[in-house]
Image (cartoon, rainbow, N blue to C red; front, top):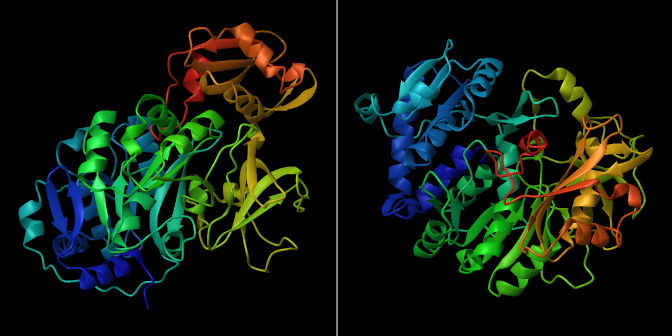
Amino acid sequence: MINTIQQQFEHMVELYPDKVALVRDTDKMNYSDLNAQANQLAQYLICQGVKPGHIVAMLIDPSFSMIITLLAILKAGAVYLPLDQKSPKLRLQKMLMDSAVELVIVQDMTTKLLPSGNHKIISLCRASCEISAMPDKNINLSMSSDDLAYINYTSGSTGEPKGVQISHKSVLRLLFDANYARFDETRVFLQLSTISFDAATFEVWGGLLHGGKCCIYAPNFLSLATLKSTIRDNGVTTVFLTTALFNTIIDEDIEVVSSIDQLLTGGEAHSVNHMRKAVDGLANTEVICVYGPTESTTFATFYPVSCVSQQCTSIPIGRAISNTQAYVLNNDNQLVDIGEIGELCLAGPGLSLGYLNKPEHNDKSFITGLEFLDKRERIYRTGDLVKCQLDGNLIYIGRKDDQVKIRGFRVTIGEIESALLLHTDVNSAVVIVDSNSSSESQLLAFVVSSSSDLTKKKLKMHLKEYLPSYMIPEKIHFVKSMPLTLNGKVDRVRLSLSV
């Protein structure tokens, strides 16, 4: 019985030993060689004291070595903690201290990026001779599907990183018996996300656990021209894009993704205008909106977009993916009626085992004992407000913690952003609350426009068609582009500091 990621990968090695598993630029590696090198590194890690259940951090550029290291840590029975070289040292330090990591694997020169600590550092380059001398056979440890596979750190509302613990079972649930995307030995997945972003789980293992191919995007910066050639030259079939990157590609060069047959996009609310352009301009590409917090292992809901009518005012986040349950609850943990707004709560084997060393957060976010659940079943409170349509599709409204009081009225920020995005000349929009300008909080809108003719007055007139007066931002700032976080989402903190 296959219980773990590495067991499923080793099964693919048996079926497709000579098939290309990895490609980066002109370099290729087949399943057999990838497995052998991962086994050698796993044996080396065990000799360094790594035991089942240990957390091993890694700070490695996108490369074959990165994938080899992921596999090796799992083969050693350990848990991988991916770090991003672009993360501030203070954040890296907090992650390493919180997880009590004793070992960090680096490629070579990246050691200078690490904060000081009690952890041991292994350089793959410096240890290459010792590693290559290790046995290259499978280790075959006895492991359970409930064992941890990796930890992703995500920032909560406090800004403190929280370690989300993901089991092997949760990853396998994402990639098998799936109803939201296609997985088989013919698929070529683009590995574009930073490895510390949970979308990488889909990108890396989506191909490698089915006998398909993982195509690694090599450059340190994103170039649409290079991205287009990478996709076309390697026959990439499946791509995930953050909402911000999706909008940029649709605006600047839709041909970047015209050769693929499966495009998934998510991370933030989608613009109706961009989605309409995408569906109209990508005749041979299936466009799928996906939604999911890290705590539910990458994706939780999906919505295939076949057309976007002129009357459409929002793009749904859709229905739950396979092996996932979605509930919409009120503040009393009761199911709401169709059309009513409530908090989206998720259940199923995709749920995280909880936050590492954060029992107080676990008690608030992971709930048991609800009357409509089985006795031991948990739900995860996403903090996202949604409503369910008559057709069963969920509509994203906004964040529960983005509900603010303006002039005595309760306002959901996401609703204002959705109304802004309905304007044909608005490419992206973000609304924040300015509590410093006066004794009363004010709404501020930041807008990227495709037209120099769009004025603040015109935009406010547009908003009056959709929103009551108290929801119309007092100030509108036009910006050339939105600042982004490392994970490709809009950096609201930087926007608020720019006022």
